[in-house]
Image 1 (cartoon, rainbow, N blue to C red):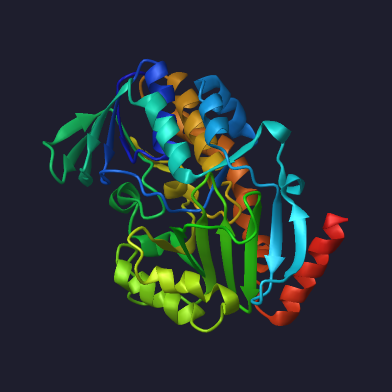
Image 2 (cartoon, rainbow, N blue to C red):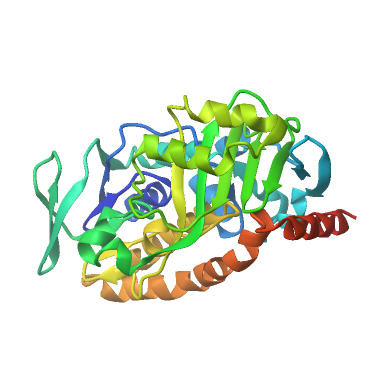
Length: 370
């Protein structure tokens, strides 16, 4: 197809897409609202199809250098006693020991470094308007001058502005799954440098992941949708975490105390994004903007795979991109559908609702460990 493409979002999906489109001769512009990347956010996996994509991009050595060295997941009680544990090798995908676990920030920065030599990046800006005009899309920005592009792709996450502008309000496509998650960097682990520790009470999970030298604390808790929830309101996020965990962490209460003073706290609803179609004319969405829901860290794998498939299909088409966008969607939905259905299993494993369910999960982990 060739031509000019605007990508909203310089994260995992956006950077992967920018790299592969530029390799195929497209003129690529990326627009990113954030001025930099946060260090919070649970580690993610590069597994299955994403491994081959990273290898083709030549970034696998950098990813391995920044990878975590986690071997086990251990379940503790609020007194600090280990109740069960399981080797994480049990969760390896089709690429086996070629797969890596890495912080989301390190993955995104590595992919962006590979793409930035081939794409223009507009930092600190955002799309405010999209108007399809024949064989182009007219775009207005918060700060920059208006411009025309042959194609616009929203890779701007589950709160995608492109999706709202081109497909409709979030209420039409985003479903709250009864859970919230918060993460923040901390200064020490609780189960050593090679184990993720998880502490459960009914409807709540607290974890500390050693990551790559900067441990990350995670708070996962069940709660109905907060009516006035704002994913950018840090003070509201701190209040919600405090209300959910106060007096429930036992010997780990110190971590809750640190939430109040945190300036790098990631917080969001666990939500499922479902669209009947991933494209509208010359506007498309990819990654979490199209189909988010992952509790086991494989959302980044899906984002990389979707971006690569989209670039492949666009590169094989001349003129009208509609056929390429339909083929991208058909191919990638086969990967996404089972992950979205998997929430029914992942939710009870990570955040059991009752003490009985916690005990059953721990027993199952001990059996698996044997």
